[in-house]
Every structure is written in structure tokens, then in C-alpha cells.
Length: 393
Image (tube, rainbow, N blue to C red):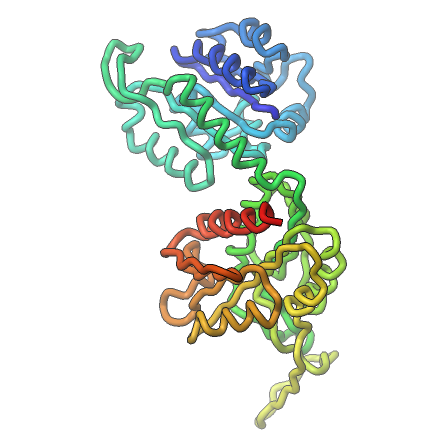
């Protein structure tokens, strides 16, 4: 495994040498990147000799190509910045890319961890705390600074965490990321759209946020991920193979054609149950009379997958407005699912379009009612359950 170690300019930079050695003891290759100010506290030569790698110190140094930050970002299993100054936290939070390390961050699809170090007042300042909050919300791991004697002569919070703690946290993230390595996963997300005529269609309220969170979490854990999505306003997670579809029939074709090659399918998409019996080539004109539209069943993707599955883990979703558990259990059995995620979409607390969700996860021999969580947290809980199923086979 490879860790890209970013080092920024503060007195704690000398601890980067210890972090390199501790990571190497666990068989990890370290690729150091230093800011200009970091080199005022520890030399690039020191980290180069310890790591056995050329240290990148400048976006325009002789051996760095114009896309070096892209290739380095792709090779890392973790971007660890220790120490991380208030300045680099602000750059990361606001997308500033004016040196190699900040440009590297914007190019990184692997997990990111920062270990802040600074004066107590700088750490407690609302601007710094808001930047840290922003980074946490994006999934950046933060190793909190410790209290103790600071370089400025004061005693307080802001000292870089001990190298052993930082490395322990980094190893935990690396272990977590590799739990799905070698697995191939297919996730569906969003609504499907059934066209009536060139300007009108039938669809549903799904935003796709739950499915995209599930795909992103699988990618973070090292899986090879295919995301088949109906129309949404979301940006596909970095690192996944994205397949855009529109109708239930298009989604069925995309899923069926890939099903035999995957280990897990999570059908989080809200697939239309019905589609127009025919597509009207020209716009249906408004007339002062009732309009009758004939609908026929759309392809039942989940049922077909249940009939075809061999060793795959198959997960379905059930969005209900009443009798949640009863309908979910029926769907689990009728469609030969391994897990079903059921949620109540009635009332004011509907998850459609929200970043929050409250679900009931039901398996063949157990069930778990989750509290109201972010969809990212729901995705983490769901993948924990799926991984248990995979390990038991």
C-alpha cells in the first residue's frame, strides 16, 4: 500500500520523519510531498533518504510533469497531511490549488487524513473550525491536535498528535479501505423516466443521493464499482464506472448485461413500476376533454436478478407509505433478496431529496432499525452488513 505524506510548515514538521519510519514498519511505501514553508523546518533530503522516494516540493520542479499530481493522486491509498497548518486546511476547504500539495488534494480520490498543528488561538478560531467542519463533512479524517507545550511558549490545545497515534489512525483507514478490494459491485440509483411524448414523461421523486452514497462508500472500501443511474443533478463519485440511463428498460439492459460479472448488486434506484403502452411521436395537444393513458408493467429488474443470481449478494430497497415491515418482508421473500432496506417516504420526513434517511435493514435471519442518519452513514452501515454476507460465503 502507498501513503502520500504531505508535510506543511510548522515546528511539528520534524515528526514527519518519525511518521515515515512507523509507516514503513507496516510495509507501507511513503511518497513525501512538502510545501515551501515545510522545508524551513525539515529538509527534503531527510525525507528523501528515509522514504527512498524523490520528494515533490514544487509544482514546477524539473522532474515534475504537468500531470504529476494526477498520477501521484491515483497511486496513493491514502493522502496523509501531518502536520496540517491552518493555511492548508483553509486551502483544502475552499478548493485553492496554488501549490503541489493543494493541487494534489483536489486530484485525490482516495481517503484523506489531516493532523492539524498550530497555536491554540488559531485552532479555536471560528474560521479554522469552520474549515475543519467542511472537511469532515466531505469525509476527510481529522486527527485532533493534543494539548501541551507549544512552540510559541504557551500551553494549550494545538500540538500535533503523537506520530504513533497518527499512524494508528492511518492504518485503520487503510484497513477499512481494503475490505472490498478485489470485489466488483453494481449499484443503481436515481429515478427512471418513462416518456409519454417528446415533452412529457412519468417519473418519481428519487434524488439519487442514497444510491450515490452507497456507490461512493463501496469505492472507498476498495471495490470496483459500476454506478447505473437514472437522471439526477448529482456528480458521480470519483473512481466509479458511471452508466447513465433514462428508462426502466434501459436500466434493465445495463444491469442484466453486467450482472454475471459482479459480486454484489445494490438496487437503490426507484425504478418505475409502469410505463406507457406506447410513445406518442408528436406532442399530445391539450383539448377540453379527459385524457386516458394506457400503462403497462415496466421490467421488474429486481425479480429477474433474484431468479438469475448464483453466488451474488442481492440487495433491494422498499420505499413505502404504510405497513413498512410487512411489505419489505414480502419483497425480500418474493424477489429472493439477501437484504432489503426499507424506509417510510410518507409525511414531512420523507428522505426524497434529503441528506438524511432512517431505514430498516432486514436480512434472512435478522433485522436492524437504524436511527435517523446521514445517507453516508446509512451507506456505511449497509456495507458492513453486506461484507458480513460476503465473508460468510
